[in-house]
Structure formats: C-alpha cells, structure tokens
Length: 270
Ligand code: DGL
Image (cartoon, rainbow, N blue to C red; front, side, top):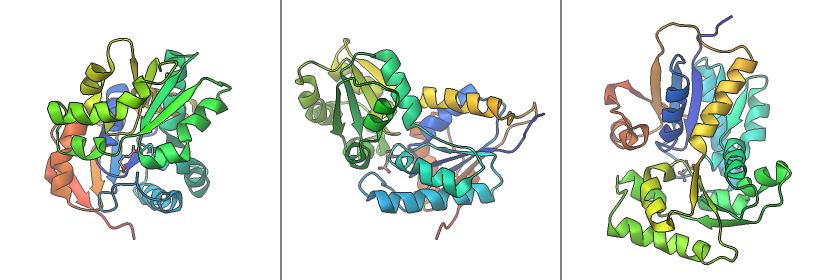
C-alpha cells in the first residue's frame, strides 16, 4: 500500500527549510506542504504557553490540507510535541529534538556536549531532557545564540561581523572545563552558519546538525506506519502567514534552491 498524501512540515518561519532540504533529499518521492508562521516569528523569545498555542494552530492548519503526518521542524516549538501529538492524534507527529539528541550522543557518548539554541530552547532545557531520556548523564552545557537568527536571515553567513558574534557565544563554551567535544546546532537557522561556526570552534569539535537525523526518523516512521508514497510525481507547496515574497527570497538561503514567490500561499492561522 502506498500513501500519496503530503507530509506536513511546520516552522516559525523560513529556518525549517533546512529540515525540508534534508527531508527532500532523504525522501525524494514524497510530497510536502511547508508552513512558515512568518507573521509570528521569532518563537525563540516567546513563552512556552504562546509557542504551544501557535504550534497547535499551525499543525491543525496542515491537517486541514490533508497531510499524513506533521514534522515540527522548529527546535523551539518541538517543546510542544506532546500537546501537538495529543491535539492531532492519531496522526503521527515528530519533532527535531529527539533525533538531534540521539545524533549528539552517537557523536560524543561521554561528552561534554554543548547545545546552541534559541532562548526558549535553552530555558526549556529541551535537549537536556531528551538526552537524559535516553539514559545518559553526559555533561551538558548550553548557550542561547539569539543573534544567529537575524544574521542567517540576512544571508550574512561569514565575515568579521559573523565571526565576532560566534566568538561572543562560543568563547564561554570553549573555556568550559572539561571542554565540550560536540556542538549541537539546536536551531533551524544555525546550519547555514555551520562553516563559520566550525572555523571559530576549531577542528577538534564535532558539529551536529539535527536535520539529517530528523529526516531519517521521518523515513523510519512512514515506513513503519505504511505511509510511504508510491512512484507518482511529488508536489511541493509553501504556506506563509505573512510576506510571501520575503518567504521566497529569504527561504532560498535555507532551502538551498530558488523558491518561486508564486508558489507561496498567504494563510491566516487566527
Ligand atoms: N525555528 C526556530 C528554532 O529552531 C528559530 C527561529 C525562531 O526563534 O523562531 O528554534
């Protein structure tokens, strides 16, 4: 049995397109509907209650589009995974945190592991909880990197300003004793800064990006639930809650390919 319905992917904005990119590479026969809640970006500075409300609204909008599962491609919103899963039950829902935590542990089982994320992700301790849930007591250090999001959205991914910002966030982590061995990029925007972060961090650090592991987890889930698409022509649809033109322009930085503004539909989640 095959299931041609699209996979719903949701993020606070365009950053989740880094996860979409990994999903499209891993699952080339699948169709996708991507929703960016651009009207209410950023989520990283908002309270957990507000993010939970937004995440449930966005996920329900995807369900209304006939998706067969929902991927919360936003680290900050993934804290609401249990509530979203409950609201959408029995539709499968997956977030990026557990796959990211697994990838970090696989790369550095004895740690220390450094987690970079938004204020919300760091305050909520989402990755710490997920790592502990996997039975590990590995040392963990966390650092909120709020300036990475606007830098990435400006397409500013290298140069002296970027290096100075990275140093400001990484220096305290690099001074930690014992020094972390793995840096987990716990935010959708950070993969586009990966090369610059790696250059500042130095060669002895492993940079972990949860997008690839999340895509693998989605592939396993749809196979296990018999939801894999057949061989038809896959479709790609974008929804944004504000500024579809900006979504297409900035989204290209994250998706790694051009987005035709005509393919981005403006929707209202209220
Ligand atoms: N998508 C968010 C995340 O991965 C980053 C942008 C935001 O703060 O909304 O945490």
